[in-house]
Every structure is written in C-alpha cells, then in structure tokens.
Length: 400
Ligand SMILES: Cc1ncc(COP(=O)(O)O)c(C=O)c1O
Image (cartoon, rainbow, N blue to C red; front, side, top):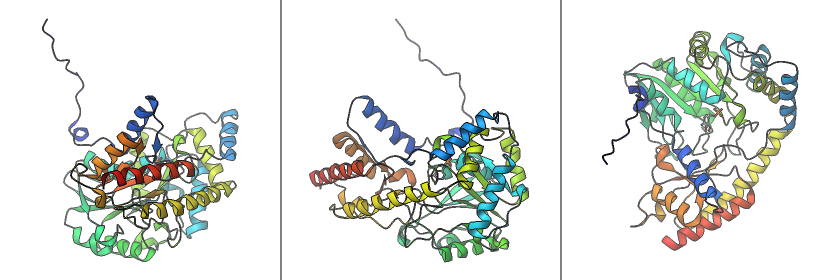
C-alpha cells in the first residue's frame, strides 16, 4: 500500500528558521536518555547549581502564596523587588539606579532577549566574543541582525578592547559582554572592562553586560559589575542579572535588567505583550534572596572553590589536556586538541565517544564557538567529579 509522507502544517517564520537549537540542551538530553536506559552517568553538563534553593527563600514564597500574592504584578515587577535590586547595586557597586531603569524578568535570559530585540534591526551587527553562551548569537539572528564573532584564543579567552576595536564596522550596534563567562569561566579584569566601555561609548555602540554569574568569582578574579562604572559610560548599557545561579533558583525564573529609562520602556513594551511579569510568588522569593541572610551564597562559593581546585589539578594531570584558569562561574573549559587522533577528530567526537564509552557527559566547545575545547561543569558533587575525571583519564589514555 502506498504511504504518503506526513506533512507538518506548521510553518516556521524566517527569523526562527535561521536559529540553531541549543547545544547545551542537546547534551542534557543525551544524558537523560542514557540514564533512562539504566546507565550510571557522570554528568558534567549541568548549567545550574546542584544546591537546593535556600530555605529562607522557599519560606518567603510560601508566605507570599498564603498572603494571596498570586495575581498579576506590574510588568516591571513589584516595587519591593525593584527597590531590593536598586539597593543591592547602590550598596555593592555605588551605582544609583531609578525605578524606571529596573525591571524584573523571567530569568536573566529574558532580560537579554528584551534588551537585544528592542535594539537590533535587520542588517545591524552585534559583536559576540568567542567562546560565547549559545543564546547570544541566536537572539541577534532572531532579529535579522548579524552576529559578528571575535576570536579571543590569543588572549586566553579574555576579550580585549583592541580586539573589539578591530571588529567594529559602521554597522556595529551592539556588543554583548559576559563576565564571568559561560563557558570559559574567564573573568574580564576591571581595567579592560572599563577600556572596552570607553571604546564602545566613543563609537556610540550599545552594550549588554550579562552578569548572571556575578558573585561566583575566585581569586585572582575580582567581583566586578559594569554598574560600578561612571554614569557617562553607562548611557548605552543594559545589565542582565539573575537569581538563578547565585541563589540556586534556576527553576523559579527570576532575573532583571538595569538600563537607561528609554531602553527599559521599550523592553517593558516587549515584555508587556509577551510574558507580562515574572511569576509573582517568585518575585517575593527574590526579595528575600536579596534582603535576607546571605550565608548560603558563601557556603556555595566555598564548595565551588574546593571542587574547582581539585578539578583543575586533576585535569592538568591528564596527558593531552590543557586547562586554563577559569576565575569565575562553575565551569572548566579544557583544550582537548592534544587528545585528538584519526578516530577522534573533533571535540564533538571526543564528547560523543566519552559519552558512549564512559557514560560521561561533557559539552562540546564547538557549540560555544570553540572547536577543540569541552566544557566541564563542576556544579555537581565532589564524588561525581572524582569519578568523572577518572573516566576521562581512562578514556584519554585508551585513545591517545
Ligand atoms: C551566561 C548565561 N547568561 C544567562 C543565563 C540565563 O540564566 P537565567 O535565565 O536562568 O537567569 C545563563 C544560564 O545558563 C548563562 O549561562
């Protein structure tokens, strides 16, 4: 009997058809499939803390629910949350923001989305340093603009003002910064950050500074926010922040944007016609996160510090693997090109075969624009890290 191909009636817009699916989500899916098949998986793919949300934050959410704070809020979020964010930036970075320059968003991701889509037009260029978080170029592509990538391997993945300057054209409208960086873990030194902001300011280029890993910095890195720069360098700046990583709140979906009033107004228009406001209960939880006890942040940071030290030492002992110094976030980003051979040509092959042969998940660097590297998340227990590194070592020794 003749069978007909099933045609989907669904038509994808041109903007969406240009976008790539997320490489990090693909790695998560691969790990889930293996687990479902009963395998003992070591998972270095996680882009989220393995800690639970601190109890005081959960209790605040419970109180908010019981008090009936379960209705729509203003698009920009509840006043208490705006105030808590403004106070945090004043206290920590000496920055003065007004309520019309702050909006709560559904995660840092929505802040970045709002900021990029309100700015870019088809034909504009958006500068994105490699390696980049997978979402940056895709949002630019969604608007019809062109992501222009900046190579940074020569400076060990620390973006320099000189590299930015070389990439600027008359069409450059936006630069996206991300420090601490996912996936490299590198932290931009404050002096270089400032030089980059001076350069973009001279050229009238807008900047989105993704500071979702702001608080996770290890010496010699320094916690630095673009908010601490003089206000004349911030007139075209949008800071995207998040509660996801700092307070282990990835599922709650709370973040924020800090930007000049006219940019914020445009972002509120977009958000007002899409998600309206972020979840009201999660907003109250976020107020507690910022204004309540901060011990949990220190506890998480201390544990990441311990894991990071162990992991970096152990990775550097594996032949063929070179690992730079990630001063922030919770990722190591080793160069595995020294392990590549005839049957293992790319970092994608490395990640795939490691998964098949050792049931160990790492994320291929190519998805972040850095072929030859893999991302290893240490947002997992020390036991998992030790077991996973032993598997990577066995795998490398077998193939090298
Ligand atoms: C660099 C970077 N920016 C932004 C985000 C968005 O996080 P969220 O939307 O959960 O705040 C992530 C999440 O992985 C990230 O790695």
